[in-house]
Amino acid sequence: MPYPDGFLKNRSAFEPGKYAIISPEGRVVNVIPGIKGCALTILASPKLGANFVQMVGTVGPEGRTTLPYAREDGVESFIFVVDGEGSLKVTVDGRQETLAAGGFMYAPPGKGIDFASSGDDEVRILLYKQRFIPHPDPGMELPWTVVGSIRDIREREYDGMNNVFVRDLLPAEEAFDMNFHTLAFLPGGCHPFVETHVQEHGAYIYQGQGLYLLDETWIPVEAEDFIWFAPFCKQACYGTGRERMEYIYSKDCHRDEAI
Image 1 (cartoon, rainbow, N blue to C red):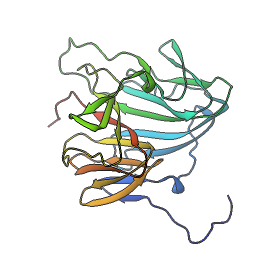
Image 2: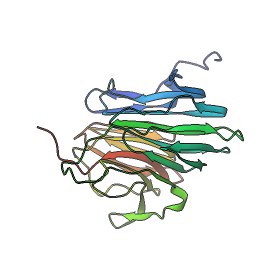
Image 3: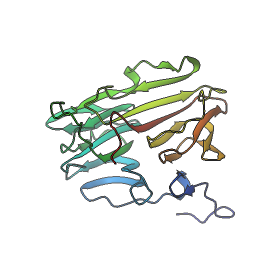
Image 4: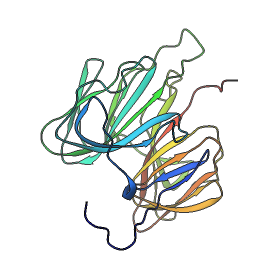
């Protein structure tokens, strides 16, 4: 690493039990057993307060798994290719797909994810896992493997606003206890109201800038920031800057709360 230019700076913020912003300048590379030729950073885990684990990082031309990621009983997982000129061969439960930028794949509980670079160039990925909550109906089918690309999913207007757009990456079926979405704001676009809800989110901004309300504070955020929202944390966003702001986020859904 070079010597710093001026004072050390870091925009990250953490309010225990409420929210966290993990900005890129403070990240370190973590060693993840079973993953080689990659430079990954753990962004969220139960140590933060999250009920999931999420990572971001690069997969080099020789990057690969040597053990399936998250192949544990009751654990579901998800991979998303953020960007890069290369591609990944991703295998879930014997099904292999090639993913380029914008591609994603969901692995049902206990199946895990294997991936290997196609050897062409570097890509950046998000990796995610959480413990699956079974549906209370014993006759409900288990979730199934899902593969796709955000480039093939048509955006729709968010709550009828023509400057905010959403995509659903996973089926809106009760078999699934989670989903991933992308949300995009044109400059001046915003949430229709300040949200306060039981669901938690992990959001990775990959384009643009915005102003995010987290609890009682409006905080500037931009591309490459990760945000964790605890349940019931007040939240809302305005898209700012000269281009659209866009991020991918996780959401728990389709389940009652335990008591």
